[in-house]
Amino acid sequence: MSSTDRSLHFNLFIHDTGHHEASWRLPASEPLAHIDVAYHQRLARIAEDAAFDSLFLADSPALWGDPGRRPSGRLEPTVLLTALAAVTSRIGLIATASTSYNEPYNLARRFSSLDHISGGRAGWNIVTTAGDAAARNFGLDAQPAHADRYERAAEFIEVSTKLWDSWEDDAVVADKDRGVHAESDRVHRFGHAGKYFQVDGPLNVPRSPQAHPLLVQAGSSEDGKDFAARYAEAVFTAQPTFEEGQAFYADVKRRAAAAGRDPDGVKILPGIVPVIGDTEAEARELEAELERLIQPEYAKLQLATLLGLDPDRFALDEELPADLPDEDEIEGSKSRYTLVVELARRERLTVRQLIGRLGGGRGHRTFAGTPVQVADTIEHWFRNGAADGFNIMPAVLPSGLEVFVQRVVPILRERGLFRTEYTGRTLREHYGLPRPANQFSSTLVNA
Image 1 (tube, rainbow, N blue to C red):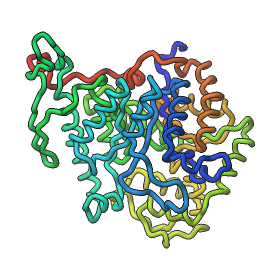
Image 2 (image 1 turned 90 degrees about the vertical axis):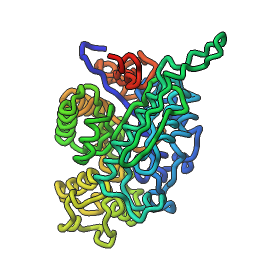
Image 3 (image 1 turned 120 degrees about the horizontal axis):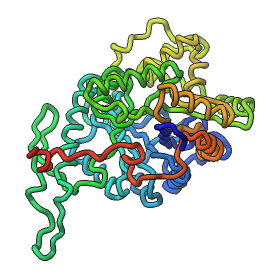
Image 4 (image 1 turned 120 degrees about the vertical axis):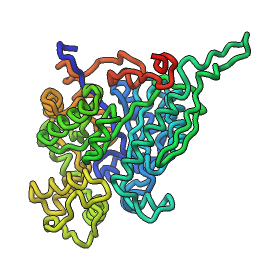
């Protein structure tokens, strides 16, 4: 490494055949990749060989989009990550899980189990889940209000951390001579009773190697940023321009400091969708080839779903309607709604043009260029207060990841910006974060 005190953090965001909407239609794409364990294992090994900090699987408790038009449905991510843990040894393993449609005990147990299975590499991307479709899968007529979802999420985290701490580190003694496997006074029943949850404890899994999984958050609304400032250790965010990325970075770091946390303990990772060619013209032709494969009518339905609006209000060759609601009227994904509407307004895009812009990364930063240009963009954001690292979202998989690893990563290493090998074994060590203290430890309680 060079004299810089910081190095980039890279997370691979795996999304079936790639993040571009039309990637599955390319001749080389595997249309069943979304349910192929061996395919995911291959991607995990490529990212681990390049010393990425982590990989990430998104998820939703509802079917997203029209399954007739592109690969739909997902394997349950914590289950899939156990299969990836078996063929890797260092890379972190992050799964999305909803606080709106899970219970703390079951979810805390799953992540603790994954942390044990992987040797300390588990991470949880905490989501509150927008959309009525998910609500209807859990006995509700409509999604809970935005503020209510975040209030429940805060209590969910409180209960989960109590469960992870309910076993002290030295509780298990496995003393055969005394016939004592665990010291009972170091396993804690805490009796939580709150607005949303009543949980006695303790967890039925001993404390895991990391103690708590790495806590990740991806909401960028006002509630989302406050939640990140209180709890998140890494933030996945969609910021299409450098100026927006810089403003978001400063805002979340400021909120973390106001919440009494070290801002350096909250890593900001914007998404980037790189399309890489030997020349800029070649990269743009690859991007254009993908855009030609987008099915406009289907993409319009996706856009309408994202914005929570009637698709009949959109005409492909006209701009978005002028009378769209403000963010504070939206109960779904507020931050993504605002991002998309502001992009369309700022660049005066027609719906067809907007669909093309969103096709590569759903509002994340897309960039077509040479390996040096991609590296320059990453370095600029990193050195100028817009990112601590990046959520790498290849437009096409696996080829986009292979090109990034083979052509961009070496440039960043030459510049002293990215590790050449792992120096730690756990996900927390990769991100430079401490192992959490146990709130029930006798050392803390008696201090």
